[in-house]
Length: 94
Image 1 (cartoon, helix red, strand yellow):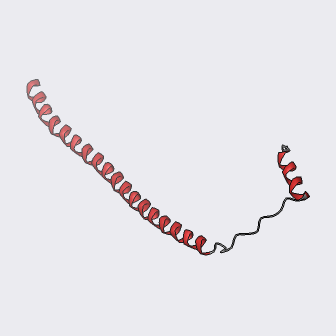
Image 2: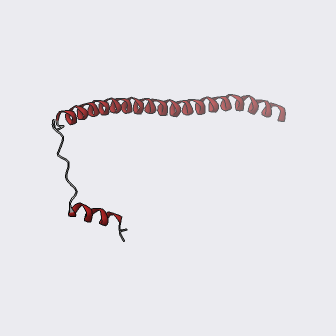
Image 3: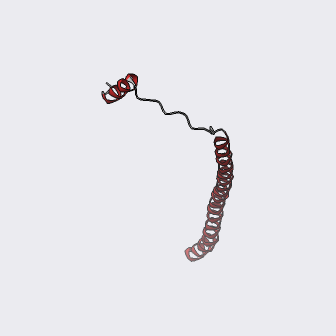
């Protein structure tokens, strides 16, 4: 009688264990696939952001070049005020 019960319990445990492993594998696959999809979305968003930043930088460069003065500013002559400023720059601030 003991042999009949052991053989019945053994034949029932194997399919349950296999089913548990399959379910665990599917759950694990779901989370890995979900993380991969989110990472791909983030990469696409970062690439779009990079492209927009490149366009903004090009536009900013064009605006800066357009607003540059055509004639250089006159060079100031060294006077007593400039010498005082040089001395102040040498003194360490506290």
